[in-house]
Image 1 (tube, protein in one colour):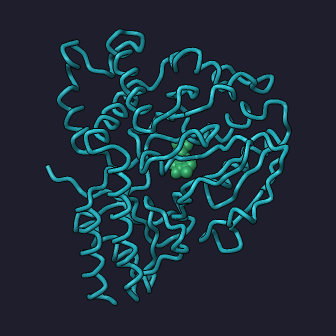
Image 2: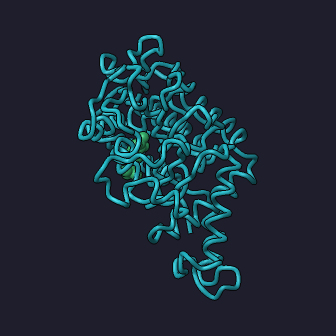
Length: 360
Ligand SMILES: *Cc1c(COP(=O)(O)O)cnc(C)c1O
C-alpha cells in the first residue's frame, strides 16, 4: 500500500489513524456483530456513537448550552437556502459580505427569499483582500449578516470575527471549521459541509442559537426547517450514519492531538512555511493580501502557465496529488486541512524547489 499526499479541496484527506480505526471496526463494531453502516439509526449502539460525537464536538468548539448542533445532509449548498428560510423571522432583508466564489453562491440563493444588501465586497481587488470592517454598510434592520470566513477557492480568510452588534452573525465555515478555536457565542449560526475538515461527504453540521429556531417562512418544507431537526436530535429521518460515525472518530483524533489550540499552531506553521517559500521565489506567486491569507487553501501560480501541466504530472509522480487550481481561477491550489501532515507540506515545498531549479 502506498498513500499519497492529497491536496484536494474536498473531499479531502482524512487522518490515517481514523481510517485504520474505521477499518478495524468495519465488519464488527465493538462486539455488535455488524458494521456501523448496517445499524439502525435508532439502535442503542448508533445512538451512543451519535451522542459521543456531538459531545466531543461541543467540547472541542466549547459550544454554549443555548446552541443546538444539527447533523444534516444536503451540503453547505442547502444551507444557502435554509439560512434565509429559517432566519428571516418576519424581516425581508439580510446583509451579505461578498468575498468571492462561495459568498456569491450564498448571495444568489438568498435572493430567492429576501432583499440582499451587499454590505461589503472585495470584487474590486478580484477577491484578493477582505473589505475592512469600518467600510461595511450594514443595515440595522437586517435579519442577519452572512459571511464566508474562508473562501476555499480564492484562498482568503478572515483572521478575526467581525463585530456586527446585535444582528445575528451567520458563517459558512465549510473550509475552516476546527482549524482553530473560535468563540461560538459571537455567532447566531455556523454551518459547514463535512468533507473538508470534519469527515466524509454527506454530512453537514449546523450550530444554531436556540432563539433563532422556530420561525421558518410559511411553506418551508419539513426537512428544511431547523426546528424539525432540533426537536428530533437530527433523527427526524435517517441521518448520514456512517459519515456521522467517522466525524466522531475525527473529533476524538483532534482531542488526542491536543484540541483546537494544537490544530491552530500546526495549521499556522504549515501555512506560513508554504507562503514564505512562495514569497521568496520569483517563480511562484500567491496574489492574496498577506493580512488575509488562508491557512487552509493556498492558491499559487507558476511564472509560466505553459508549465502547469508538467508541474501537475511531475508532482503526481512524486506522490503529491490534486494540486490543480479551481477551474474558475486556474493555476495551482494546495489545500492543507487538519489531516494534512506537516511532512506533506515539507514534501510539496521540496518538490516546488526542485521544479523551480529545473524550469525557473
Ligand atoms: C465546499 C464549500 C461549499 C459547498 O459545499 P457542499 O457541501 O458541496 O454543498 C460551500 N461553501 C464553502 C466555503 C465551501 O468550501
